[in-house]
Each structure stands twice: as structure tokens, then as C-alpha cells.
Image (cartoon, rainbow, N blue to C red):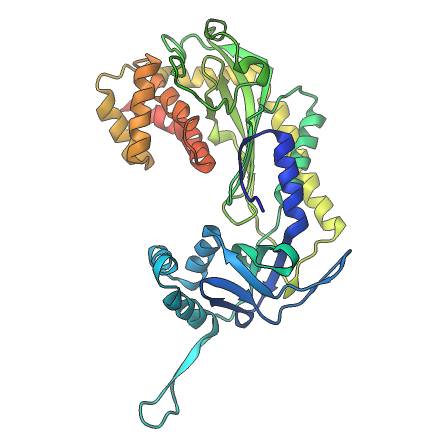
Length: 409
């Protein structure tokens, strides 16, 4: 089954999330019921799930995601690089290592054979987030988490957040390519084209780097504006928007963040300082299959709806948008005299890869804005070209911090 989708429509994202929900399974199990064999994770003796279709076993074989391996590394204190090496080339050592830490064991005396050293099992219940396989076949182990992890599923978060948008009474658009789902996170981009201001100082001398055969994804550009003539977009106009994000696998809280979208190129810059978030922390869960009551789910999602409604009412306002543009202008006007050196400095601070550093320099040159504001635009333009949706978001989230580094030296 599909587990990810990139630059998708809201409809396609929603369809995939519904398909995943049918297969989803959450089990809290003691460590002695979890084992590794040939690199797969097996559940043995775990409680079956009662569904509308009958009793469904939870025991069985599950392929392992990178995110699940992150959980193994964290919970069992196995270095991540070593775990990766074992999975790639020595699953026999991987099995022995994982099972040894999960189950404990004893080492007999060299001559008597009696136990000389006894090693304890992991001893704590663990939550496994899973997808069922087809017809009882191999499933998919998505994540290994604490039994206190608070579940907020992507589909529920998305629907609750969109209810909050409707309650705010502001017209918004989700671009045709405005949704991503990775193994770690859901990203949904929302734009309000009617909430706009002019930012001539922030965009002075800037031109879209996506002319001349270059291309971006249109991550943020509203559908009806994406293909308009470049001359029509070069007005210095910026739109208000926001990002909805969530992780089902422990890779981040539910989060909603305001975003400034630049009409010239469709770049999006996140105002991370004003973001609202809610971590996935819950009460201790009992062993077995997890099923939330309707009342528990309703209360959690009502909070998401209310917080989204209040945030949208604040952020999708020209006064708020203008205040953020004004705050960026001073740093953005700083002249950049040695772009390669400044970008290298920022790349080290922000932990950008060599490939990303080169792309930022290329987009800076193509954008023609030889100021700190041009570096910010080059970073968010690079976000439109990378394949990894999580990395694209990281670039957009760090753009204002990079602007400050470039503007203040």
C-alpha cells in the first residue's frame, strides 16, 4: 500500500489517509512479545482486535520503516548508524542485538553451565503503530513509541483544522500541489489570496528564479495564479497563509504556523515564532489494542478546531501580515558583498547539505536580489525544488533565522 504522497491535492491526500485508517493498528505490548527475525518485527501472543469484520489477529510479521528503526535506536540505546549498518548487511547480528535488549538473557558459567550473568529484559511496555498486510500477509511497522504517546491521527487533525478554518469565516485555498505525506509527517499548505499587502522594500530588484526553464513545485501559489504571466506576478504583493502539520509516529507535535507567500515566485516563508503546537503526550496506556472512546476523540479534536479558528482569525489579517513584512525589512535590505562566503556561513549554522548550499547560491544569483532578503528568497526557492517534503519544510521554517544571520552578520 502507499504510505507517502508528494505535492498532492487535498482530495488525493484525504483518499490516502482514509485508506491508511482502514489498515491502521495500534498495539501496546510488553517487550517479551516483540522479536526481530531476519530483520522483520514479529508480534507473538498479542491480543486480537475486535472489528466490524470480526476478530482480527495482531500477531504476525511486519516490515520495518526507518521511523521504526529510529524508535528501536532510541528505546534500546543502539547507535543509529550501527543499526542501519546491521539492517543493510547483517540481519543476523541485528536480530541478536534487538532481541537481546528486548528480552534479556543469561550467560552460563564456562564449566558448570549454570547461569553466571543474568541480563534483564527491557521491561517497559511499548506502543507499536502498524499497518495490516493484505489477507493476513506481511504488515508494516510504522513506529515504536512510548506507552504514553498521545495519538492524534492525521485524518482527524486535518478535518478538525479545516473545521476551524471554516469557523473563522475566511476564504482560503489549498493549492493543487499543496499537500504532502511522508513516513514522518503530514504537511498541508493553505493560502488566503484576498489577504495581501505590498512589500516593495522586501522584494526590491527580486525576480522569480523559476524563469528560463527552471521550475518550482508551486507549493504555495494558489491554483488560479500559478500559471499567470510573470509580468503580472511582479507586483511586490505578498499573501497570508498558514501550514498545518502533524506526525502520527512521534516525529513532531500537531502544529499550525503562519506563512508569508510571495506572489512573484510562490515562495513561502514560515513565521515560526508565532506557531501554535500541541505535543503528543497522553496518559499511560494499558497493554493491548488501543481504541479511543468517541468522547476522548471529540474533546481532543474540539481543541484543535478552536485553536485553528483563533489562529486563522489572527493571522489572516492585513494588519498582522504588514507587521511581519515591516519586521523583516531592516534585515532584508542589508547588502551582500560576498554571497558564497555568507551562504557557506549560513549553511554551517543551519546544517544545510552541500547540495542545498549550492542550490541556495544558484537561486540567489538567479533571483538578482543581492541583499539578505535575496538569501531568504533563495532558501525558500530551494524548498520548492527538493524531493524530500520534510526537508522542504525545514528550509522554509529556517528562512527567517537565515535572514537574520545574513542581515546582522
